[in-house]
Image 1 (cartoon, rainbow, N blue to C red):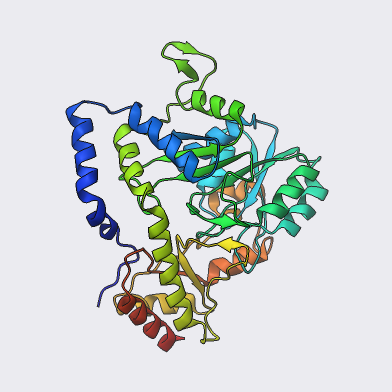
Image 2 (tube, one colour; image 1 turned 60 degrees about the horizontal axis):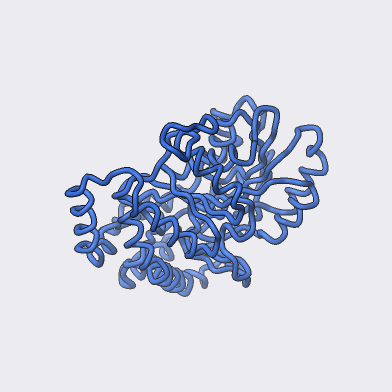
Length: 371
């Protein structure tokens, strides 16, 4: 038996004809940049996120960069995030000239630890001129946004929610964008809401920020040759917007299917004391972009699963503070012990909406036998 880590073909069968018709129409009418499909997607995605505004852009990394620029984060400022995330989070901070710094994560949820954030700010807020914080909603579960927002208010910080893995997630009934100044999304094909290529978006309830982001993403302009500021070329193309509009209508159902698959995984693995399955806060709706477990002998188990035809992933094997790209920050092993521990133990199992129960049973049997 061969089980891939992710299979994108399942959901496409359901929407194939509608998507094909959309693409054909746009090609036949040579409508490729901007236009009705992008405008309608922005309206529909804002409504889905329960925010006033959504602005589409080229990809999730651009979304983070645009958010930082809109909030006037610049050289001389510091932005704090976590080390257990993809490098796009920190790349965006550096790209606007600001300094990146890290705090450790909560060992249960793998998201930003509010206690560690507060400790850091008490020590460094003034010294490092900390202006913003980027909590990362990881693997499909939101960070503790109520605690983080209270801390941000106390220390006068802007908040950007990195929601690249949290389409449809909730914390105390609120989703990304309902807490922070801005929330950013990626529509990379493997995301819960994925395009047929790159794409991204920002959501906010602030009209001024929405208008500024709109200009920044399109060369600093609203009118064709009238530029209010220097900006970027980061636009979602019409074909991707049309595809995302179709898929957005199915997102809640697909997320429910992911949750059901996660429940089956947990039922089959929870009795094994050598496996730590995902912790889900009572306040959370975890949408399982990834289903991650922790194992002390992760690398050997992963290799054995591969021999049994089971593909897995590691998200993420090297914490950012230990990446060569950030050697200049001077961090060393032991500085963020929870992030480092997680990186050595985490293993992502196959997960997508249409994953069959018999395949989950096979994965769990092999995994239980190995550990």
